[in-house]
Image 1 (cartoon, rainbow, N blue to C red):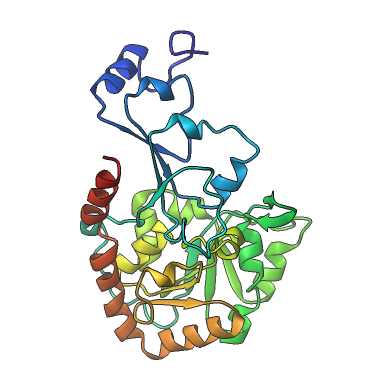
Image 2: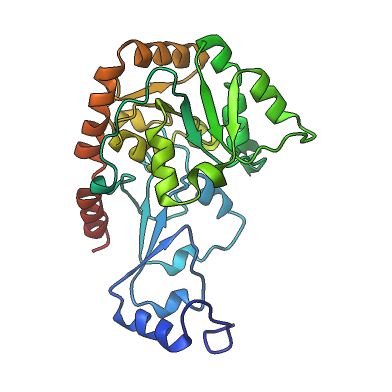
Length: 300
């Protein structure tokens, strides 16, 4: 199928052609644009926000990777000796997730009763690499720490589509362990709702896809960047990003349940210190103005 025989949505075919004609380059997020539309752009840059997941999937599925001229990844350790992400014979240049700071100014302290929270998908996916099963499931990620609220003795909350009565019993397990489960469409269904949800949270609890941790990708979340910019400390399972971002003040890492519990205690005990440090991390390392320029420089 080509543009002439395809069905256009949102813009007319002539408008699409004009956009392509005026484009200096295409940032193709997660291979969303495919041939033949992809090859109509004169300069094509793949932007990967899913390191490891995209790379391993590309070993068995043709995702038009080699139709691009440059390759960017948010995996800060891709290419490092201890990172197990297959490079697919390509040169990957790294970039940091970023946040538009004027949109995410620090919000007032919501108080100690506010939950550690996050917004996430609830999936069951897995991939295989050299006979090894790699989970790309946020379900697996959070269930690894299902009893964190009980042990920490404080509120935790997930905005995720986990329906009551599912055969797996996930919602019942989580709620029985102290998690509050809310509908992400209601609390984060628009930019303003999403911003409000983060500002009502005490901190973020980020459990990344296990593949990010197991392959040591250095992945870091753009959602976490928004929490930091809002003056909300982030507690994140380490994927290797701690080698490229400062941790210990505003941004704390954990690798197991005992480290997670210690970090929760640290945040609650020294909340004002971490709340003040959080936006400083965003300003110094995750500012969109600086990060976008780095991405553009990597496309030359």
